[in-house]
Length: 207
Image (cartoon, rainbow, N blue to C red):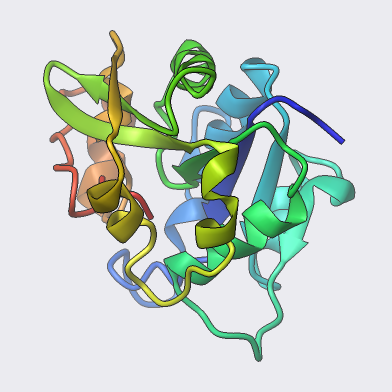
């Protein structure tokens, strides 16, 4: 059991925008994959983690983390970001909070995760912000446990963010605004060009 905040990595989406027969999390990036790169940064933060994934993507996640750090969703269970968040939080019920990080955000830096985790010691809800733009991860304190484990559907945690005062953690990390949803997004990341920021409330909303 850990009293520290746990990073809940969401890696169970269908990747419908990336293209037929190709899942964005499996695409090559930096000597690994998009998901592998995200997990590499989480592991470098030295925060505990849990990866919520699907049966088809479980082997990909197992390449980076131990089986005990995986939650493989039942294919017959309800789907959606809310359900994934609830499953990850329930699997680490004794944690000192939870940081929600989509698996398709490979540029979020380890220090950013640490800064948002630290903010949960003083705030029930915190999020990373770069130059005034909200991004990920989004952190939730232990007082929100009951509401988190009741989430379902595709809305994710946006209702909680709207309901509770949220503390912005300003970070020097443009990666908090960048996700990989399409081949063009991946080319921007791998080509070293300036990635297009993702607005909070769209792909950058609390998934």
